[in-house]
Length: 192
Image 1 (cartoon, rainbow, N blue to C red):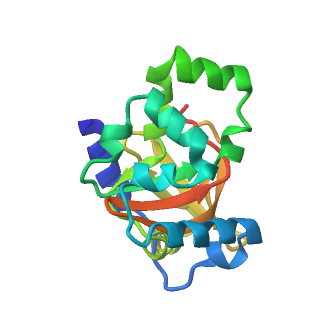
Image 2 (cartoon, rainbow, N blue to C red):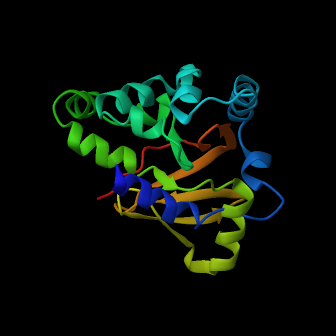
């Protein structure tokens, strides 16, 4: 848990700035609608876990958090920034692999999930500013599990590159929670 808190704190101080939100402006209509629904659903924002539980697009994420015993941690004080994969993002992982992770290899699952968490409350504006300030190399984000992500703006969207070289696009931003913020992503990130 302390690793998660430290990683989240480190990563949060990394991220997002600029008053404009190019991610939302160029996000597909269904992703923008999902973000709007989530914003409405969280007017009295619960914890990150409660917000995710309240949206059916995160049912796989909620199941994975439960299987990895991270629910209590992500319901803690925080603040945390979570790059939250949707059900469709988890759908890109072979079903047998996902089943293995959620039933037998929960330690690896926990590592994968904490790779999506950054300490602190990093809103889209702060992250965008950090990316702009970092230049062409991109902005390095330290996650709670101690790994790093590289964030760049590509064609007006924030794109995260993981340690394995995979990429994920942020499709919705700044979903408020009482203990942090959620940014929706379209692909599960892998620490190695």
